[in-house]
Length: 446
Image (cartoon, rainbow, N blue to C red):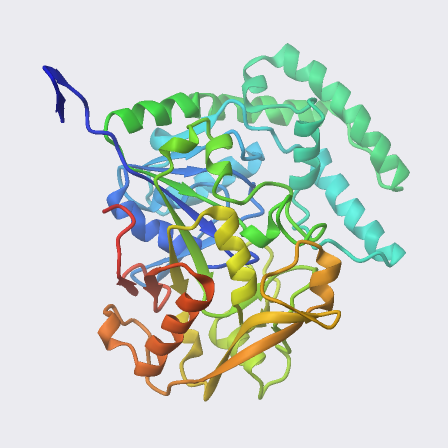
């Protein structure tokens, strides 16, 4: 492009992918599919409590911390400052991917500002959950990986960060101070305390391997964008688990919404051009918390059991069985507003194959009143009684279809009605776990 006699470089187009439910919507597959058009994939929040399972030519690969773009040759992968990093886990995941022949270290860039997850964070996380269960207060349902306590240290301005690994004396000083804080908590929770030296020695060992991957990620993304690279921002968890906007306190410890793609990386919000929301054709949730459309997954003749078994609904990270229920359009409407969704990708449509009828929650009865959007108070959500619309199902198979016109008529009618209810376009439909099992209606990068 030219302006006067000056040539202005062509700048890249950037896409943010976020979950619009309680996580586990199938973001990993969609991100992997989109990286065919991107030169960089960026994680901007969460930690290795996230899990993305990719299926490529029938082979499954589970990722937790490393961006899904690692599965594409030549794609740069960035871990932004909004992510909390367990350095030992990071190297373990790199090693696992290298064993299957992937080049990781030369194209992975880790923000120096990422807070570190240390062993005492994990110990405190597990001890707190055990205490909640013992006291009958109800577990939050954390993964026990130290994510929450690490974010607490960040907000308290005492966190160890990736950049501290370059300065052993500074690291040691901060580690002693942090260890004192968390050992006091472990003592109060009647758990064993941790020793300084083993933690310090382990950190210094991993530091030598992580140093070559440290980067000023915000500036690196800026330069890539200026040079014309297309960037893909990969969210973890889902909108309804967001620390501010989810069903608090049954949420994760970070902001999972699209706006955090800017704060969690250091690239300005004006550089986020398209927001792709991912939602299942039904709803799932892992862990505790209210779930208005939940069905019984143990009833072998019921829809909940069908969704659980056919959808293979187990958490990538924990292996826990996911709770399953009908699609909640009122909750989805809340997520679309919060994220400013440009378009949706509906995943796992094929799991609904064979059901005689399909229901969608269009709102709730709450204390005698009709409500058309998910309430912001988790106690109110727990009292919500879903109001359903019912549609005829389909007996034909949608698995693996790649064209809209190939879908059964009732499946198309179902998707069209969902689009009307939520007020957002459906731009993609996933009909199976493989990257090729995708119907494209509008491309986010075009």
